[in-house]
Length: 188
Image (cartoon, rainbow, N blue to C red; front, side, top):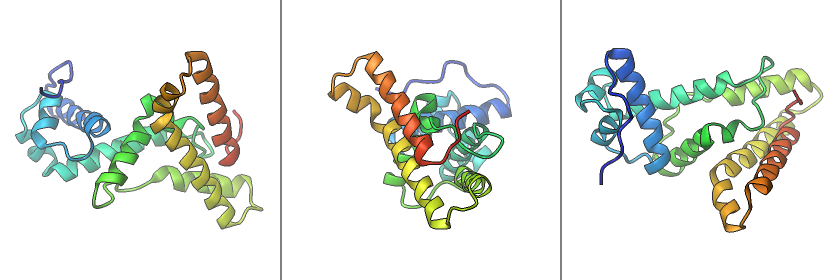
């Protein structure tokens, strides 16, 4: 059984590049980093040779897809540089699931940069200048671990514990509040 294909066949360089990056992200979430060039191309609805034409290699495509994911997440930061407390859960937990897959499966760090952490750290320094570097690091690490972990495991844990939609929503809101509190993220 093959991987389902994206709905519209992309036409033109920009559409093909976007489709390949989207397909890569979706397949990493579903199957991990060991997807083949043919699987990615098939999911994107393009010839697999276009991966080499536009990206040079699968690794370069994966890095480009992860950079796009980082850019989308960075665009969600507020004007001060704080992430929304529910960032890891947005888009079905895409960011958290990709980070988990890449960190668990890849032999090297496939992200070219991590712009969210730096901007968040700078925002904390500006908004709470009395904090030490260690306190800021602890805030970011703790709240990131909670947010990312919940985004990855929320569905599974909710199902195991028989949570209905109302209780799940309440728990999502509670976790989001904790992420904001632990991460020094101001209320909007």
